[in-house]
Length: 327
View 1 (cartoon, one colour):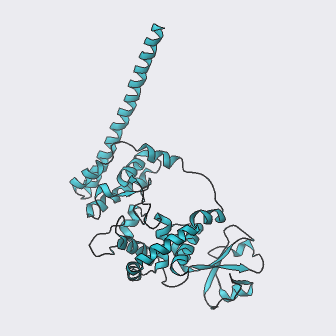
View 2: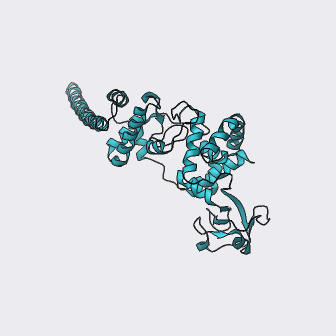
């Protein structure tokens, strides 16, 4: 028994030493990786103190980030399931309450950046629950972990360098740069590359704070949509009825026809009425296939897809924003 205890103790000691050696080697590798990031950032002219302060937030690869990245759920929702999940009546109710409190701020900001409140409210609601869920991960730590991991290292290293550039510009403190495990930031859930391209100052303080400044959040979302071609006060789409099933080749956002042509095929508004305009071009989207809910979608639908290239997402944003702003 005593001999067995000695053997177990020895084995535990060797195993522990081996594990410590692995961790130590990984720590050294990660340290070398961060040193390379630091050198690259300084070569780009970024502040040494800001870079050091930011990289001090990540000491080793974040195991939780890696677990979430490697074990993303692989399941396919139908449109009906997705709609029920992301568009419960409670979200519309909350959105209307929130909108009544921010409309006076949002409306002029949306208009200034070439959008309208429907698009901003829809995206704000889907991305962060109107600012309630902005992510709990340090963006620098998450991006550094994913850049080091190697699976998509080029992409995430690029985003990490852009995050350091944002910090260098002084819009947010390194410790306050929080987001998702994949580095999407703040209430608008911008990746750093999107931030640099679209983030905007809505409150006039000279910074672009998509974490805690609602005017900046609204301005940034509106600027994104505006620069992608949003047509203010034009519809994104609407639910329709079909007199008979359409051929699969006629379905899809790229198969546009005038509303006059669609009406000749038996397409009507959801209430059964004819469209008031006949010259506008639209396309039929029927996510769950023949016999299920159908929508006529217009130009702004495709603009929403620039934010997230998913028909489900664009429908969700359109329905939520319209249901809140113009129920």
